[in-house]
Length: 289
Image (tube, rainbow, N blue to C red; front, side):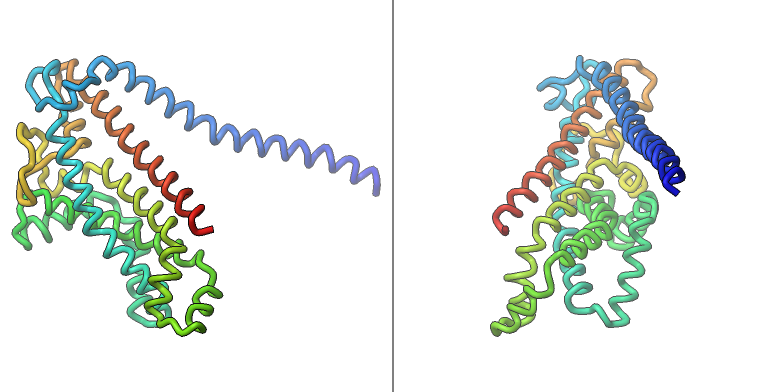
């Protein structure tokens, strides 16, 4: 019996080493590929990054092209997307988690949200084209693009907010109710402050996804070339991913450097948003605990 145990120990250690090596390889290979791709982008686009590139309008000459309209359009669309999606998503999560846990309506909504979270983004573009551009008469405007992107990230915000609400111990709810607080006072003053770091983190990550999406906005009719800034909610627009797509599709080699520089700006924006999510989450958690 002792010999069998001694034989099994080296075998189990060998399996453990193999498993750990496979896990490390699964982490290292994607990181290596990512670093190679980022390095290639930086080598191509570093020569174009500068203040002139950020403040210039698109041009048919690669050396004069800039991303100002796309950058401003992205700010418009993402800002409106957050204004539309965040209240709806958090409100839906509060209803599903705090009020409608046993109702048939909540169960139907929950099933549909789970299904919508896996729908390809181009389907949201078709929905936005029919619902906002044509049926609602918004046209190919900033507000139509924001509503389309809000539909895209709404399931993610709802799921993230529900998970954050579930992390709040039920005993805190019972304690607030026992002290005479109403159900809404308990949610507003006890549950939401505790869940807010998780809600904020999930919402910012959802917004990060919206910044990089191209297919929905192309389907609903966002412009690929624009030489003016958006002036209002009903103004035509473009965004960074569409501008990058436009440059990549051009035959001149100089536009490849412009596209790489645009990718660098987009990556920096995404990294800043993710860093903001981590900072706010840690700061709010320190305040709570």
